[in-house]
Length: 344
Image (cartoon, rainbow, N blue to C red; front, top):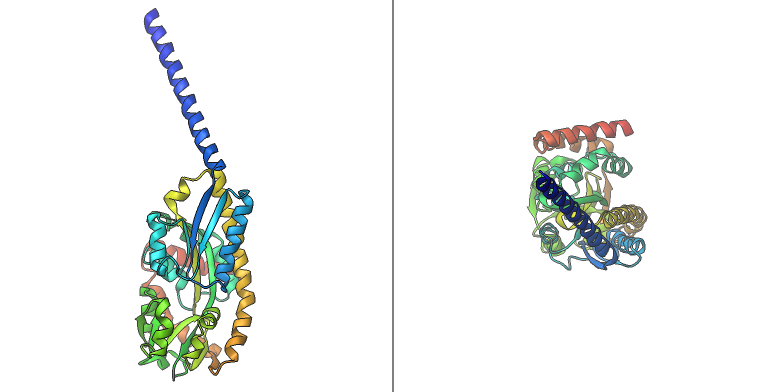
């Protein structure tokens, strides 16, 4: 019995020592990580004159400030790291750490995000930010995790408007026979089919040439994108429709993010929040100047009336129903409707 008791004590002490060593090793590893330098690769598709880039710079400055220079950020604008989809794939696979991409680019990976792109869903940008920064937005960001992403927050590029060559759009019927460029998104394809247009998926980098060469008759984008890419040079009409919001989502590689210390995770979350707020404010300031730039061109500008918007809204209802067909999507969409109504 004495021998058994002695062996038991030795075993307990050994396990305690091993546990203590394990804890010390974990603490040491975390301490080493927090003291070591790290460089984050962050990509986006817009030029350096954009609010998206201004937000990316704000993220870089904030995280470098919070970390005392131990965490650095290399920014790659203007699709320097490949097409928009390739940038998203790189983050999903862990080749890069963070990217900021349009919702339509991310929906092939995370289909629940499609809800944000629904036509005539958002009454105003302020209402949208209230919703996306709240419970409904958090539910959408959580859906990214199953696909290898860590959703950090929603950014924006502004309400989308139509530009066309030769034909001014007032009602859905006016889209008959019009070839409209869209991002490669099933939702956007069905949206324009519902309005009677012929949607054509074309990569962003090829859009100006496609408009110039009459491969397509028109396109949709926010004022800032239309101005920065000078689409008004190769289009006749700008229709201020505000038919959908071109939102972006900032995502990190989930495995990489999960492997960081709690302290580093908190700094990244804080820096992204600061950056998204900076980006949204910069967008508001830039949009007015960009619209004034467009007005100086020869393009004809027309704003949809409330009655014309109502006709588009009615024609868009089947799209909402078709793309909210799963229980998860229905739940999130109903929550968004409820939160929008509460804001109103």
